[in-house]
Amino acid sequence: MKNIKHYPSKNQFGIMLAIKEEFRDHRNLTDEREIKIERKKAWMGVAHLQLYREKAAEMETNYSLTDRKFTETINPKDKDFIYF
View 1 (tube, one colour):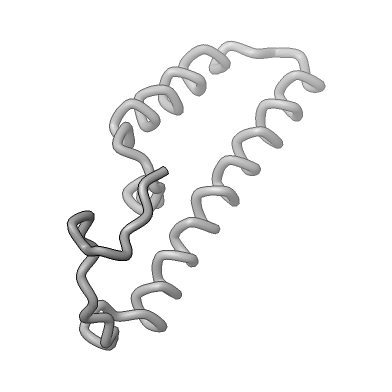
View 2 (cartoon, rainbow, N blue to C red):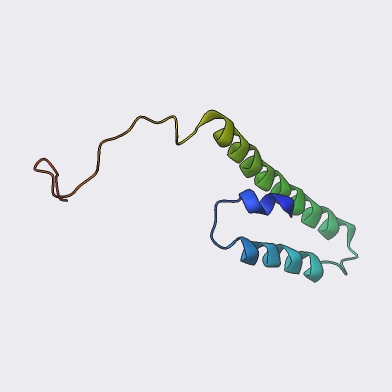
């Protein structure tokens, strides 16, 4: 659940609620096969969120907005601006 804050979505709270609901819905499973399937899905979700956490850490260390020397403005009133 800690890794959700690194997931690139505006709906992080909704995703967290959906995950909790999934666990609540499957808490009474008794069939070993179904339990195994749901555990595998949960671990895949954890791995997915860890990937975003690691990517966010990589972006913080490798890229910085202060390092960029891009000073050109993007102004539609420029004479060379192309409208699509």
